[in-house]
Image 1 (tube, one colour):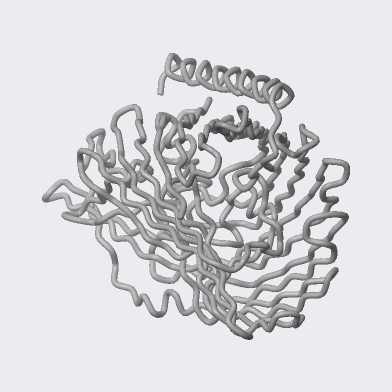
Image 2: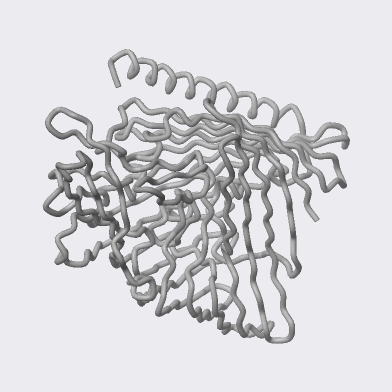
Length: 481
C-alpha cells in the first residue's frame, strides 16, 4: 500500500468518526424530543447478565437481509431460536442459529447450536446440574469485547460474532446473593470461522469474511505458486481435551454492587496451525502441508462494579491468560500464543427517565497475547496467521434509543464506534429497526464501516485491517413468532 492509499484510509477513518459524532448528537436530541414506554434493548452493546431471566417457552425469528459490499452483494436468510423449558425437575435450554448466504458466485451457510443443555433443576432448589452446551458469563471482558478467549464464538460474520457455550457438565449453587458454578468436560469444540474448502491445492470460500492463505511465494525474485494440503491427523485425538472452569459471583443480578472471581484450565478455542513447505524445482511450485494442534490456557478473571445506581452502571473486568503451548517435535512451524493481561472498564448512562435511551463508554487495554510463529520457516516476531487478540488499547462508544411516534410506529436506533489507539483501526456500525405496535414484522436498515491507518500485509493479520475495504450497507425484514 502506497502513501496515497494510506492517506485515503486515514481520511476514511476521520470521516467515520465525524459520521458517528453526528449520529450520536441526533440520537441525544431525539431521545429528549420524543418519549417511549419501551425499554431499550441493550443486548448488542452490554454484556449479558450473569443470570438469565428468559421465561419458559420458545421464541423463533426468521429474517431476510440484503447486504451490499463494495464488490458484491449477498442475500442472507437467517433463523434464530431461543427458549427454555421446565417439566417437573427437568430443565432444558436451547438456542440455535442458521444462515444461508446467496451471492452471484455461489452460496455458503452454517447452522450452530449456541446453547443446548438439559439437566436437573428443581424449582426453588439452590442446586442445579446441566449437561450439554451451556452459556455462562465467565468473564464480562471476554463477552463484551467478543474476544473468544474464554467462551468460543461462531465467526461466520466477523462483525456479528455469536457467542456459544462450552460443552460439558455444569453444577450451579445459587442463593439470592451468591452464585457458585463449576464446569468440567473431557472434550472441546474449537470455535468456527468462515467456512472454506481445500480443492486442487487451493482454499476457496463464498464467504466475504474469508481470507485465503497466500497463493504465491517469492523465490529468486519470481512469484512461485503455492499448493496446500492437510497432513493426516486424528479428529478424536484433537478434540479429546479436558477442561475445567469455575466462578463465584456475589451480588444481585441486576442492581447494586457485585464481584465475581473466575478461574479455568482449558484448551484454547482457536486451533493452532502448523505448516511445512517444500519447493519443487522441477515444477516451480511450493508444496505446503498444514497440520492442526491445540494449545492450553490457564485463565483468571475478576469482574465487579455497581449496577443501575441512579441510571448509571459502572463495571470493570480483568482477564489473565497463561498460554501453554505444546512442544514442537514434528518439524512444523506453528502459530504461537503468549501470556496476556487484559482489563476493561464500562460505564452506561441512561438518557431518559423511562429508560428509552442510553449511552455507554468502554475501554479495553491488553498487554501480550499475540506472538510470532515458531519453527524452521518462521520469521522472528512475525506470524502468517490471524491474531488471536484483535484490540490492544481500544475505546468503544455506543448510543441507542427507542423512538415512538404517536403510538403508530416505533424505531429502535443503535450505533457504536470502536477505535484502537495502538492498532490504529476502527469499526463503526449503525442500525435502524422499524415496527408497528402489536406487529411481529420488523424492517431494518444499517451500515457497517471498517477503517485502518496501517497497511495490511502477510505478517500483519488483524482481521479489521484485512477487511478494511469490506464496508457494507444492508436492509431486510424479520418476523418473530
